[in-house]
Image (cartoon, rainbow over all chains, first blue to last red; front, side, top):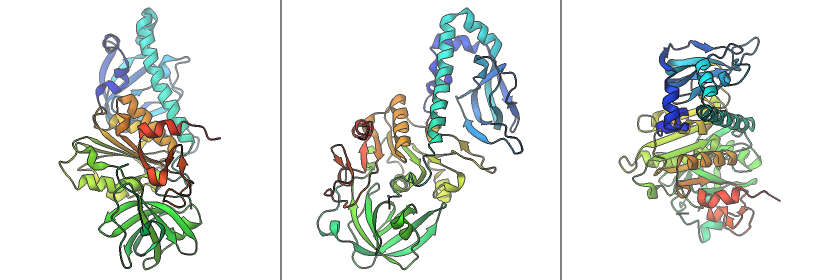
Length: 156
Length: 277
């Protein structure tokens, strides 16, 4: 990590970070375990302490392709914040995963009761969504494919 | 802009070099090692490029992907008639080479700093000699991070070599399209920045790849607190003469063959945001 403040928690002011931590407990997820399934109830979310997770999409007739991987400091899961609170991707632990696990219902309730806290959490989650949307759009450009060569490729 | 381009006779006249070795790499990509047939060109530094002439076809700019005495290594992807001709050369073939041209990465100026190398696709080729130079000077620099983005696992350049960098450098690799066997990271190369180990406030960054990837990487680095003046990027435009005369590679006030290809983000950012007419 560059510094811990660049992870999801780093986007929150310290007071709200501490408040959010009240809803967390540490979990360890074994390598290869399915963490959640596409379409399932998004009743929890995680902030990865160590290890990683792969996000995948259900495709009939073949293994779910991995569309993104997450690592230390990353937020795993944001579907819990928006109705209908269903996962829109699946997730699998890549190696042994240690994470802070949050009860999504309690966090949503706290967000509703404390607008400042709710705004901070929503803003931090929205920033994650925005970054992933931007990354997805960038990948749609298929930038590394020929003939979009870098300086080593030339134009001839 | 730390190294002068070629001047005098060598800038205009190709010097014969022989293909000493050729190795096929990622699909459509080959790495060729050139040795002078007679006299060698002046020494190249990491980041500079040569104009490599496939006789009877034409010449194109190719950054050096390796420097070993008088021997030059280039990694070429077959995307057009000239690069296809160069890509298909076998050991013993002769090419014409002009150079060295352009600015280099300016690695010595980063002494004492953490180094962050960010490469996308074949953009790893011009960065490879920089990484090698940094690895060859232990203690000269801070932590070395090499972040590599690739379209697929098969498209990764120098896969064996980059693995060998790992004990002395933090090497993180991500792909856009994994196959069933890929167990590494998936996603854009900028997502690796949070997993690297460097001090954004003082690190020196070196970025090469497709232009949107350069823009995204530099923007993220600035957001993390990096000094735009210490983010060096390698830009690409159509180059013909490589001597600053024909103007094909003009980017605003720069002629990239002469004033580039390596410039700081301070210089590049306003130019890359100008929409073409």
